Amino acid sequence: MFSIRVDAADVDWQIRLLKEFPDIAQRHFKPAMEQAVGNLSREIEPSIPHATGRAEATFREKVSGMGMRLTGRVGWWFAGDPWYVNVLEYGASAHDINSYAPGAGVYIGKHPGIGARYFMRNADERTRGENVEKFDDAKNKVIKDLTVL
Image (cartoon, rainbow, N blue to C red; front, top):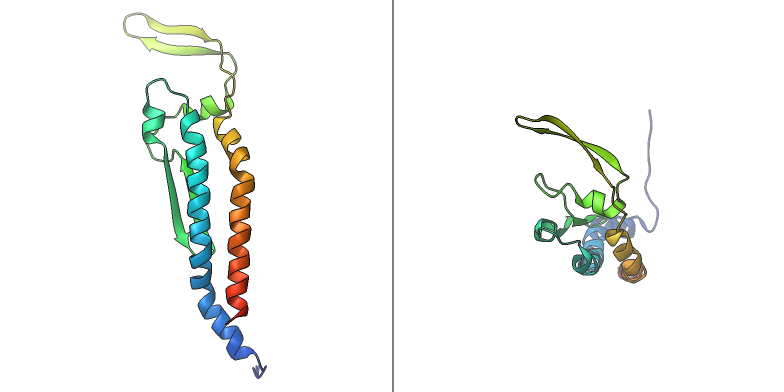
């Protein structure tokens, strides 16, 4: 048989911290995440390669979750979004193209390849310092709020 005694002087305070922490974290980290996602999105948008406009039209940002379980997304993530954005970001080496042409059978052509544009990585590098500062500020605000409970 096991027995547990809880009679530490600060148990009530610790329970209060556990109850209030999610709201405090939400209050400070969600705005920081929204600002960071917005900064990154605004930095990427003007540098999206433009040919048909599909990549620009389907580019989006989103913040979801609560408290410490926030997720920020910038880019393309739904079915039907342009598959070629990954190729524009990272490039592609020269390769054969096999395609079927009605009446002509299989056509084999050569694609010369494309150099990496790194438009998303470069935007991330340009905004990273400011975005990290936002999360550091949010962390410090959470700590401050927790110390005054």
